[in-house]
Length: 181
Image 1 (cartoon, rainbow, N blue to C red):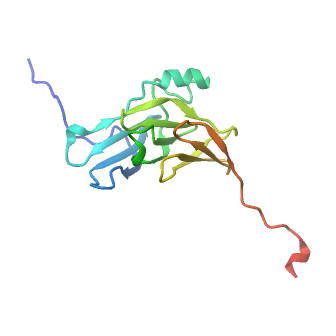
Image 2: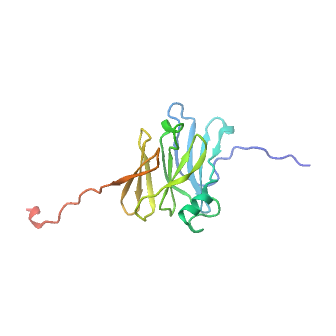
Image 3: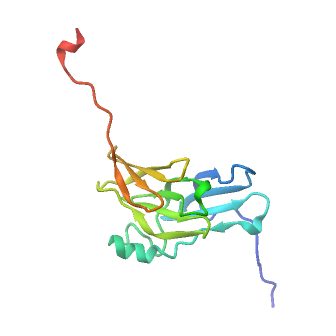
């Protein structure tokens, strides 16, 4: 027989859209998100030790599809759509899932556990029915803010994954003709 190819270092499974160092003390782990052919990925890459590279598991996608009643045009097969944005708090990764991602065409944000390298079976769903375009996680890791394409911002508690309210939009200046004088 022919020899088998067991392992190789080849980067990511598709184009990279977002990446950030995940370990501030040593800068040896890189959190990378992207997508290929309508399917997204989230990976942790170890810069010096290739055997520690790992793509985070998406085994919860079929369950999430049933919860969200999503059609196959959003979820391609058993994978999420490509990543649009990601945020995390590495200080809390042992306490609770602390990585949040926004995906192409999705009106929810997804939560991942870096400690267990898996997608959690819950989502962060703002009351507005608009596509999630940006995510941010507080430095303490307790809160995440989700930005939508319609301009609204919504806050969630990351530990309990409960909705904590909208962040009010800035007041627009009044169009009073007397104010220009």
